[in-house]
Length: 87
Image (cartoon, rainbow, N blue to C red; front, side, top):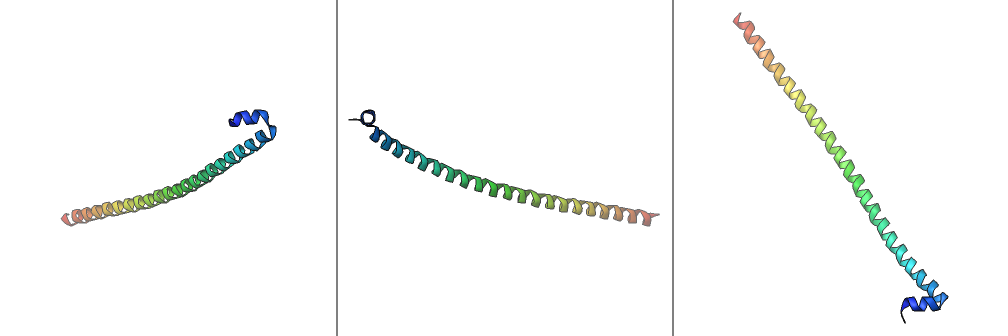
């Protein structure tokens, strides 16, 4: 006899088989929830890493801007002094 035939003829068997099926489904759902939780944690960590990288890039960009401005001021100062000496 197949499982479905047994279930049709015996309610107690049907109830027991359904309980086993639901237990299996619950275990699978718990595994999926665990994996989703792990993925969520990894995404949170990745977001933090990206934000840290962005902050580092912003800091480096600011430092580069200061360096370029300092260089330009030095060149302008040098040209001004050179021009004044030619007068």
